[in-house]
Structures are given as C-alpha cells and as structure tokens.
Image (cartoon, rainbow, N blue to C red):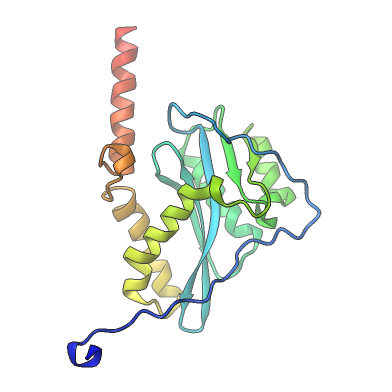
Length: 208
C-alpha cells in the first residue's frame, strides 16, 4: 500500500557520538545551572553534531545564544578536530559582544583543548561545562540540531560534502535565524527578537 501511494518509511538512523570526554584536560564547573538571563551575550552554548552523507559523515559545530536562540557561530568540517570548534568560536567572537559572557559546553576534547580554552581566556569569557553524561544544560543547542535535521537535512538527503556546504549556511542564516518562529520569543525569529531588544534598550537609554 505504501508503494502504491508513493509513501516512503523513514529508517531510524544509527546514533553517532560526537563527544570524546576520555582525556586528561581540565574540566570546568557548571556556571549556568539555575541562572536567570536578562539579555543576549550572557550565555552561549556550544555543541557538535553529525550530518550523514552518501559516503560518510560531515560535522557541524554551532554556538547558540541562549537568550535569543540565535546561532552566532558555526563551522562545517570533515573531521571532529578542535579546529572545527575553534572556527565556530572565532566567528561568534568576531560579531558579538563578549563582556560578562559565559561559554557553556560539554566536556568534549574539542572544548577542553588548550587552544580553545586560550581563546576563551584571552577574551575574558568565563568557562562553564555540563556534568559528564548530562546533556540537559545544552538542551537549547540540541533543540536547534533537531530542527536542522527535521526541517532541512532529512528532507534533502545530502550526498556530498559540497551539498552540506551549500545548504547548511543558507538554512542557519536565512531560515533559522531570520524566519523560524520561536514560541519562547513571542513567536518571532531570533534576529527580529534581537532587533526588538536593541530598540527597547535604546528607548530606555533615551529616557535615562
């Protein structure tokens, strides 16, 4: 019946781990547990996911501002090297205010390596990490990954690395950040929400 109706079943994908926490690098305390946010650039969450292609996997490192849900940095690569996470971090730092910022991640080797930690410390960014095996603190970026895969990746079934490079930035910048509505943001997309915050801040300054 499915064949006659042109319906295809979706096969459950094998889970691929992207976190290697078997290392001797320093682990930092969780600074965001029960923390109440009042604006953007107070907490960024970073994580890595995989994207299946015809002959293997491509990896996406993303950094999300928890308050606005905006993806502020990302990088795509063929390996899980620390350079992937560093590229995403440098993108975020180049375009955002990092004063009084907390960077939160899991305990993966990409986020605990000396080069990544040095960039955070050089920019006076406080370091926060989830407990081992506790993904709940990174729920916001995990939610983004779920949205990305359901609304983009699974619909296109990428075959090559070039497919990923062409499509993912468009989805992040043109769809997710600029168009996708979030109930937690009053049914506004992240960029529009941040513009409203900026206008509100300007009006408050004028009153002061």
